[in-house]
Image 1 (cartoon, helix red, strand yellow):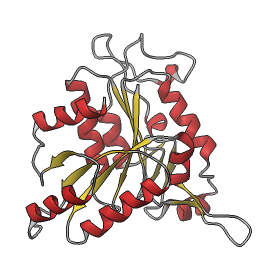
Image 2: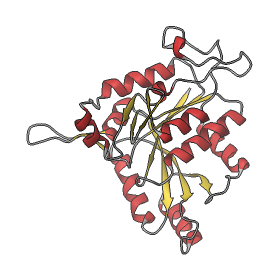
Image 3: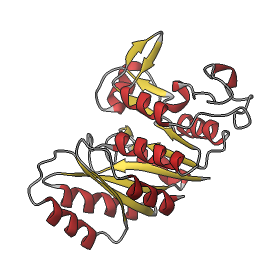
Length: 253
C-alpha cells in the first residue's frame, strides 16, 4: 500500500478536487484507492449525520470495498448495502471522523464545539482505513501545511496538523493554486515540508481561475525552482487529461 498526505499552498486551491481526480485515476489503473479527510469544518446535518461537501466528494471518489476487502471487525456492519458486483461504499464518518459545523478555522470550531483535535483520533481513523488494504490511500489536510490544531501558550507549544503528518512519517503531495502569488506560496510550502524532514513526492499545478496572466511562464518558473516533479496539471473547469493522470499514478503507486 502507498499512502500520501495531500496539502496545498493555501485554502481553496483545489486539494479535494485533486485528491478525487487521483483516486479515480488510480481505479482506472486497476488499483483500489481510498481518501481520508480527518478534519473538515463547515458541515450541514443530513439524515442525522454532519456532512461536509469535500468529505462527501471524497467518499464518492473512493473505491467500492468488496467483501473480501472489508474487515468485519471495523464498522463493517455500517457499510451501505450494495451488490456483490459493485461492492460497498465506505461510511462517511470513516472518511471524515472529525466533522465540525462552523465553516471557520478548525481549531476555533473545535474549541466552540468541545471537540479534541488529537493525534490519536486522526491516527485511529487512518488505521481503520488501512484495514481495507487499499493500494493507494490519500489523506487530505485542511487549509495549508501549517494548520494549527491546538494553539499553545507560554507553557504549551502549538500543535499543528503537520506534526501529525511528521509523526506518521507520510510522504507529501502538495497542490499549487495557480494564481498571482503562487510562486512564493509554493516555495515556502515546499521549504516548510522539507524542514519538517518529510519527503515531497511531487506537486500538482491546479488552474483555479482560468485567467492567470502569464500562466505558462509561472509554471515554467515553478518547474525550474522546485526540485520535486510536477505530477500533473489540472485545467480550469475541464476534465484533466487521462493520460497525464495515469502517468501521475504510475509515479506514486
